[in-house]
Amino acid sequence: MAQAIRPQSQISLLATDGKPHPLQDTLLAITLVLGAVAVITAFFDNLHLLTSWAGLIGIVTGAYGQFISETTRERFGMVLGLGASALGFGIGMAHGGLFGGLLG
Image 1 (cartoon, rainbow, N blue to C red):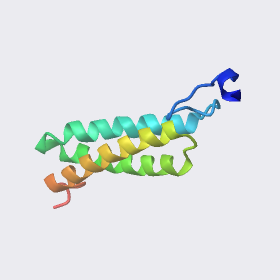
Image 2: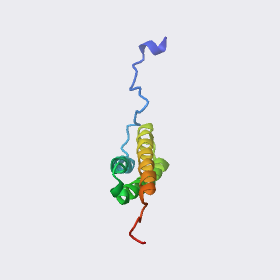
Image 3: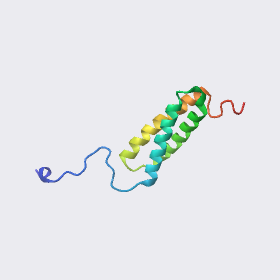
Image 4: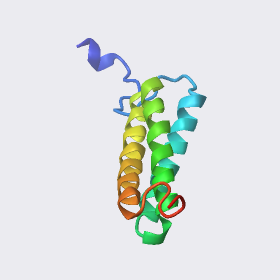
């Protein structure tokens, strides 16, 4: 019954390790913002340049962030941002791509 008298610490799936991770948190914020921009602008056909570039940069920053992330909270947010970025990138590519109409 030792667990009955031991105080429980913070129990959470998304608990942090208590250490600051400024680079990972910055990459997380950038990935989430770029993913949101990519998904929101994907609704407009004429914004395919912004959509595809925001998606591509979000994929790159999210992939690097996943590579160096240290906590579940960071990885969870990165996966959400990566998914949104990839969705926006795909739709942007379908509507005209990264250079659609600029080089042709």
